[in-house]
Length: 103
Image (tube, one colour):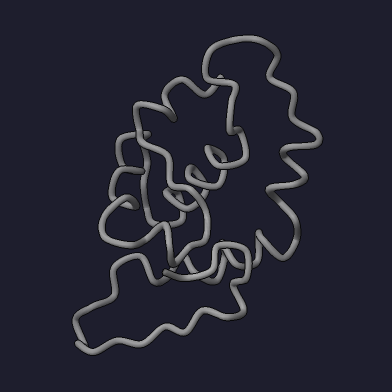
């Protein structure tokens, strides 16, 4: 299992020239972690009391990673849940049903 909070210790290696799924998200998500985007969202975004307010940073990072992967709707974020993408990206990839409750 890869370390979630230390993207500098991630080594990416491909044994097959066709294996590239979600690798392009590694750089922007690593940059977001270094910039403290998760902490910034947690400290400045207050969604009040509606259902779906929990885990705002994880939901936002999932939506950003999905958009960078070419997703244009919430359901497209489900592609990020394939395989071990969450371990590579170092963030919790939320299900589309959860993202749909994000106010």
